[in-house]
Length: 198
Image (tube, rainbow, N blue to C red; front, side, top):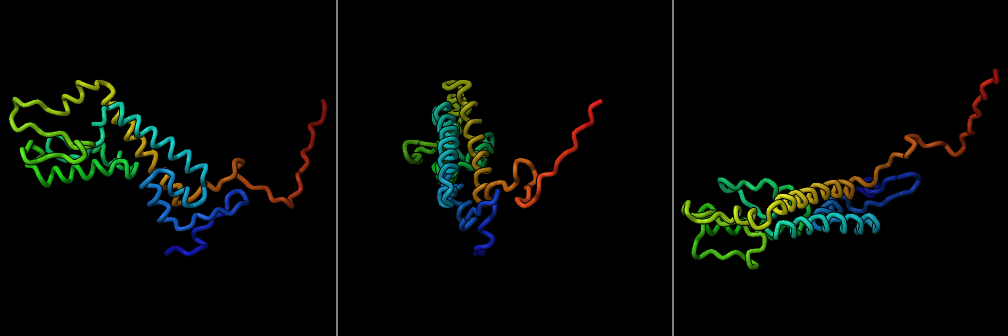
């Protein structure tokens, strides 16, 4: 466990207690802003929670709730999920659905015994067994148009932003004064010579 010295930093003359930094980072990943709330940094916690979750939820809604799913099947390697998962618990159902589909189906192809959980929320698309069958992803694109792509990117951006929030919970606020240099309070202001009038 980190020592107390490693968990406190000085920022512009004020001591900030980051408490248990790894725990704060974990909480920040699970729920955006939760790590900052744990550290007593309520304003940042509220801003991060509202901004990141609203971006993620807006993207999820734009894509008709189909833009977040976990799949690594041939023809549908959903790398976006690894970035969307940066937003924490909101992406957990997609991970569980993807894992369940992999265990209970043959490469994601429709199986009469398989039923996704929670009415299909964040479930990967079924892959058609025969070429004549419709592809679910193509149907999602057709139904939501540009909203599907926009929703994907909004959720990806929310996950990436939360990675910065996780870092801030672990590392603390940036301890660099705006001027770039702190002035010693005892230091006398130096008088500058006025240019001689010509």
